[in-house]
Image (cartoon, rainbow, N blue to C red; front, side, top):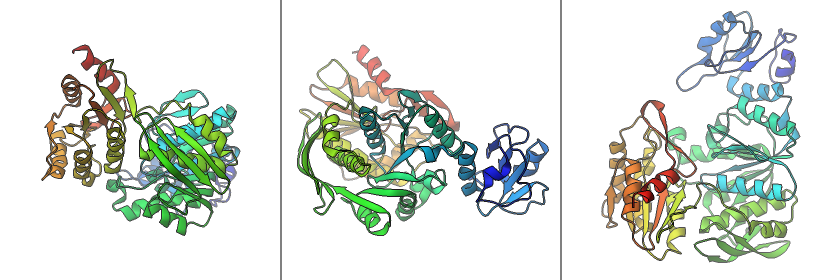
Length: 478
């Protein structure tokens, strides 16, 4: 590919006719001779420090943000913003051949994207999915490292989706991915906002910064579907300029409204009302938050031109989402639920949903991740204490922090609280204890890991840890 094909409209250079064999911004990966290396300043390493070396190793040119005094340099205002657009061109703009649906928010992204893909597939449209649990191309399941992939990986994935016949791609779009410009150059047919609660403040610094990062998605879409049950959603709806529709359970003036809501331990029922009329919905995942998730999906499908009533009929047979209110078979007189809840709001939501249908105690087992927003640790404890009957406080991806120090932060949220708890630092041991001490009709809610099948320890060491397997181990010892 000629260099001018990569940089058309985004940079100027006298090297335009140079043949390019590869493109990268990662010094850890070998760049093919004749490749284009893009220098990006990261949190711990500045790619500009590698620019001269890249040329010595055979790069055809380097993209930089300042004059490095190099013969084959291309100076751009923002190399991080340049890179995704160049990657899109490198893969012949597959994003333009897909109808993109983006979902952003603190909670509900995985459920919403999974359900949208389910509905599109049921209606005969081959669909790709990009998200926290995995990436999918139709029925093909691929491993993923992050919610929103880095630009090269993202556009390569889009290319594979197009080549394998996908019409749609529904993806979770993270605040960090938006802020870092990973989806720059993409135009989303529809973008959905689920909610915004405290998370990732270690990255964004404040809720306002977090809010503004999420808002970027609505400058990249044709239509926005916004949950206006919260002040953040109402604010988005008033500030964005694209075509938009609203949904909500609590807000009377929502375009799509859930009425006459009913709850059970297995799912939610309600009547969906919009300007087109009303119809009944049953969604087989429990909790008030799954009214919001399913209602947002129906609103998004209607925004894309599909019939909401038909979508509601198909939702009745939805099989659930791995690690989201997932029941783990015990064969005993108590229940174990595995859920990804790792924010105060998510902990409250899952425990409230379970408690509404529980016959016995609700036992919350949870920890907090290391090297992440420490401010939410006591808040998660307060949420768990308020909505459970007993707590098992343990570790969850401690990374480079002392697990016991993390637990001390958690315990600060329990001052003045009378909900009983036990502290067991080792998560495997904690799960074994919870299973061994379960009482008849108890519901043990394992919060925080969800779909994850690993623990991240000091030095980035990742060990296999699947809570479903640990529960089976514990049951075998009873």
